[in-house]
Amino acid sequence: MAQYMILIYDDEVSWAGAAPGAMEEIVAEHTAFKNSYQEHLVDGHGLHPTTTATSVRTDSIPPWSFSSPTELSPKPKRPSASTT
Image 1 (cartoon, one colour):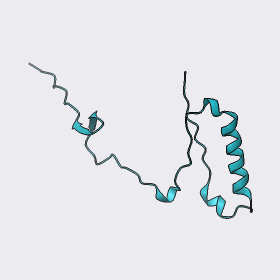
Image 2 (cartoon, rainbow, N blue to C red):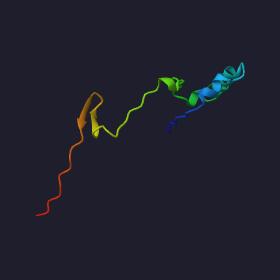
Image 3 (spheres, rainbow, N blue to C red):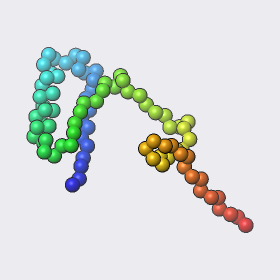
Image 4 (cartoon, helix red, strand yellow):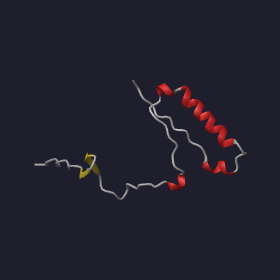
């Protein structure tokens, strides 16, 4: 059976000026959605605030591949074509 991921994005800054009770209303709507589709859902959790996020830059990292979940190894180099 196919599985899908649903991401619900919201502007965190807008919550600072939201009307009282707005957060509770949204949480109630998310809970109703979860309850409606519970038999089809695998799991669901809220994410941490974006202020806690980190990013990884790959422009200065050599190309690596995973040979196992706990071991990093360089990607094998392809042999160059012979011009003889």
